[in-house]
Amino acid sequence: MKLEEIFSDSFEMAKKLVDDFGRFLLLIVFGMIPILDFIVIGYGYKIIRSGKNELPELNNYFDLFISGLKIVVVAIIYFIIPISIIFTTSGLGLSFILAPIMFIAISLLFLMAIVAAIGIVHMIVNENFTKAFALGEIMEIISRIGWSKYILWLLVIFAISLFLSAIQSIPYIGWLIAGILSPFYTVFIARASYLIYMEAYD
Image 1: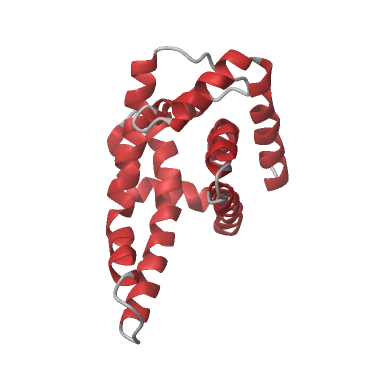
Image 2: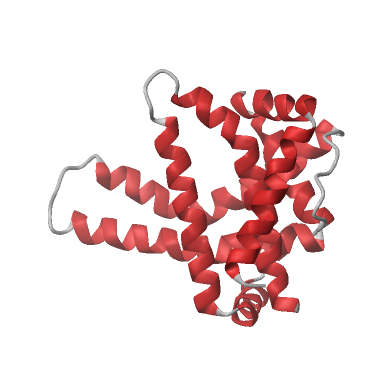
């Protein structure tokens, strides 16, 4: 598939959320409550696992919570070092030495994102937590997808994530708007992640 087809397919799937207002409302509520928002992340896990262009049922909340927790743990393992460096150096003022450290940390963060995005899908598809860190397999999958195609896909995902973060920072109502958009974002990202992953097997 072309990238525009991947994103179009993902957008169309996200729009299906409005067909079931009860499910949509529950996802909004869960997404706004710390810890319970793991259920929303787990719903994304379920979308990837199904591989279908249809929204799965929102049920078995404990299973969704555990699935979401797995994704969060993987993300923490991948990003804890560069994020810790960024937060630490950002509070120390400006200097030449700190600037290179910050640059290295941001570069490391991006490199980790390249691996983590496919690693998470690889874990879900294989239902095996350790597959999230199977670096040799992950690199092979990215090579099959095509590095230029995959990096461009990742940049688009990153831009959408920044947009949602910008909305969230709007005074007073940003949190509400972001909360409403969050389920759409989750479905879109999950479907787009599955489709780019499957490019390695076409």
